[in-house]
Structure formats: C-alpha cells, structure tokens
Image 1 (tube, one colour):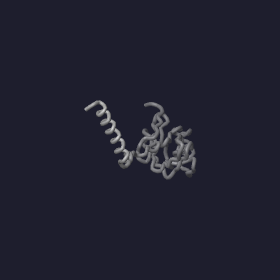
Image 2: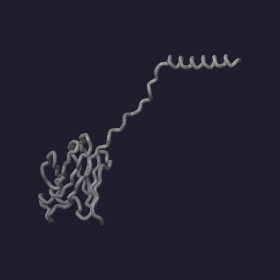
Image 3: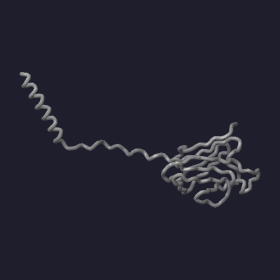
Length: 153
C-alpha cells in the first residue's frame, strides 16, 4: 500500500468515526446529587452561669443565660435541638423556634414566658456551674453544632 493510499484510508476512517459519533443519540450526563445544603450556623455566643445571687429565686435563675446566634444567612428552625451542660447533666429541648439570619435568642434557666428573643427552661435550680462546665448545642439529629467551655477542674 502506498503512502498516499494509507493516508487516504486513515483520513477516511477518521471522518467516518466523527460522522458516526454525531449520528449517535445524545446521552445524558450521569446524575450527580445536588450539593448538600449549607450547615446551620447557630452558635453559642455567650454564657452567664449561675445568676448573680446565691438564692434560687426566679429572678436569680433567669439571670443564668445562654445566648444563641444564627450566624448564617438563612433561618433555622430549632425544633428538636438540645442545649445541655456537662457538670450538672441538664438538657433543654427546643420547641418550634425559628431563628432568623443574624438573630439571637437568650435561653434563661428559670421560669418565664417565651418570646421571640427570650426562652425559659422553667428549671428550679441552676443548670450551669460557674467554676467549670461545657454548654453543648446539638441539632435535631444529635450532631454537635456549637460548644462553649469555661473554667477548669
């Protein structure tokens, strides 16, 4: 076979391959799942452990607080989320509370009437130790979202 014949055969085969691929039906790209939704960005931003007094009055219990802030750009429903301590082993479960973007809510230990900015656990005793403790916020699946540690043993 001459060089010219060989070039002609290779070129013809290449053109035929291109034409055949153009005639094939289009095949969709494999399905890729959507990117996961961004994680909620709710953080424990402040803890005031054991109110200013030594009494267990409602006023003193309500002075013990944990502030949560939604640092994200979308609202987060805290329903089923929990706030717990390590030292005294208390757990507060959130009801249907929607925390808008960049909004904060203060969780009080003692009794009171819940509002958009203040929630009350209704506890008759302090929840957090002033000397050392850990506050842990978990989502409704039990995944840790935020932790605040203070003091030492």
